[in-house]
Length: 477
Image (cartoon, rainbow, N blue to C red):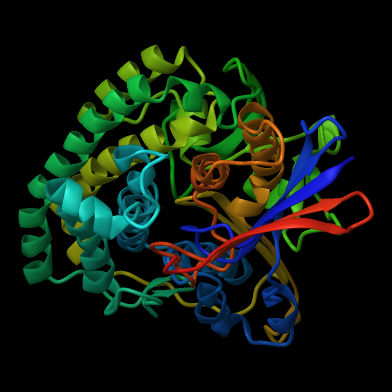
């Protein structure tokens, strides 16, 4: 008799989702779905708003990485204004985005995933959280908090506040970095680098500790997509799109992000509000691809910073070239923090970050614009159409988490098929299924964080929907 197991909610992610696992008559996993059960509607309620408001509105898509939406939004507006951005403004925007990558990746690794990785997937659930980690390994927990704080301090130093800074504007930014704040941030940099280097040492040990998880957490061939700079160097703000396959071969290169609709399609499933983008030449769902840290390290030729490039070389030796297991997202995230910190150091030393030439101004010169940059979770597109008065007529937001949707669903199914043997499922197995999603660090609404022992309800039903059994846990039991 076929059965359905529901995990609701998925915990320690940003937003609200559930997982359905379908068992066949023999009790083996036949399929699994990752449902995003919230609807926010930004693309529709932005219609009719002035272009100048879009950065502030769309930043509210995300409470964890608002900078990513700010940058993609103003880059779309830059194209509509048809302005040339001052070099100082480009460098300041880059500094802001690097700080965003540092703080978001630190949150993902140390707060959301480290409890699983360092305390164990089968550890006591009431202690498998950031507070349990702080008790067990205070140096790692404190370092993660301080590292994230450093990223937020850069954002605050530039934008005036840590969340939703109204500092990035079409044509540039609203002001330079002060000399006093620059000196302070330069002094904080060595500690941040030391923290991530220690975390990288821990991560390498964890690869030996979790060989089965490494092999079963989303380990399958897909395409990988992201931005690269000249000569294929790792990029996070500008550049062209590159697509590679699971063996590292380049499938497409030099793609203009503004023409993303020529090669990326967006499918919709009835069981989720999250769209399922795919690579058009291969069709749906065969055009499955991944974005984010794993993809960026797969597609780039090098990181172009000395410490991180050494780590990248070792990483590629460990994973055997191109990484296909989603478990390596954690490892890739730490390497991206390191290269971001090195690049932050370069920019803080650049006199342009203090320049007073930081914005170009113009009116509506084009009626369409696409802004693209790398959010912590992957490539992000904002596509706007306006009328002659600059009022928004249509908006399309292609979010990184959506681009990982097909891969997340396949990851859930793979983990479930590997670990589940019948309807009686140990808590540690349930946690592994959730952890497979956490590896992607999905940003569903990005305004909700679930910490600690969260409520979880699992229902086992037959093929007619009849409830056969329920397993429930709440925040205290």
